[in-house]
Length: 206
Image (cartoon, rainbow, N blue to C red; front, side, top):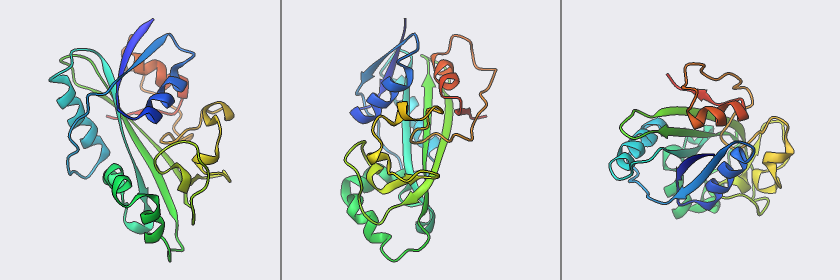
């Protein structure tokens, strides 16, 4: 069984990745190392910085994820600052900002980085489009789940019980069901390739 470290202190994220690979020959181990959050424009830059920081202190293969909620009528806010915004103004603050908004479209975006010692990381990006609710709904999940309804669904992520098992497409936060091809150039022994093939909609970035 392959062993893969997931760099996160977020038990919700760790539970999700365990669910994602539980039928694969991969053992995922949580490693809470942490890395500084920098002020940049994209999630890709945050993930790349995180990889560089972790590789200086950890000599094993690992994955990390950086994700954010991008609200169209707030010009993409909170975006790359989603974690900070959630810890400061929280869901109530976001709903307050959206109080008089009629356009409530948004997207969860997620970047996974797979890295081996002394090698450049491979980045995967996904997107899940949806709508911001007018009030919190549901008690499951974590983060912005109670205020986000994915397109073509009637429930928030927080209201979806066992959402990884509920949809035959393995639809999940941060990954678009419209992304259906993977990059055949990825090494055959790369554990994240198995994850990509399993989900079917992770797109390796150039």
